[in-house]
Image 1 (tube, rainbow over the protein chains, first blue to last red):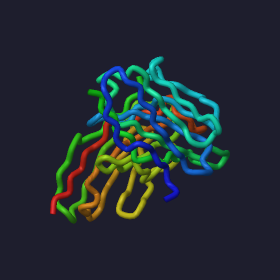
Image 2: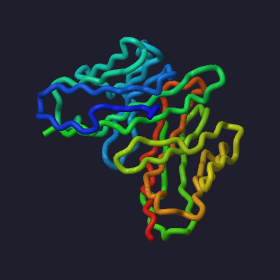
Image 3: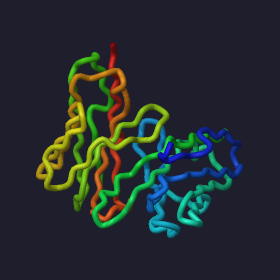
Image 4: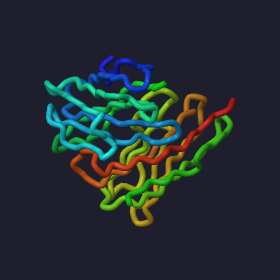
Length: 116
Length: 115
């Protein structure tokens, strides 16, 4: 399978704990995006990378959230001191950005986080 | 404020019937509009993308239309199948260079196909 993969698919944690999610994009894609989606809502943009550089961060990304893409390939999203309001599906997407590309984003299956 | 409004919020139709989903947006400037299909518990999958100059785009039984003057788009599904049951999300981008700042997602229309 050469699509976007995310790990884990499900995570249950207690309030106050730290969690880390991983995303592996489509191999030739240079852009990687993180979104959060709650039930009945569309995805909300959190941040995105072009290669290893983090180019944009949403105001939704509080200081408890940090994302990295150290080698321009896989990315991690860490949430520190989780709160119940962090419970959501965390989606990763990747795209190929270039002069003639449409930047279509290909989404992974998501990581569902439940904070008790 | 940039917004994307979709209607109806949910829709139930019988297998084999056609349906049309609506998307109205206030995003400005405008670069492109995409429709995604999201199965329950899965990530969205791109169906169509249309730029300012395109009025219609088809992908199998899915046909999207765009009226950039009235800022409206529709997604028409022909001869629905049980596998079409999903949420359909309209996404509008203000920038041609990609990126995500300003990318505005609708809440989606939840479509259920009944046998």
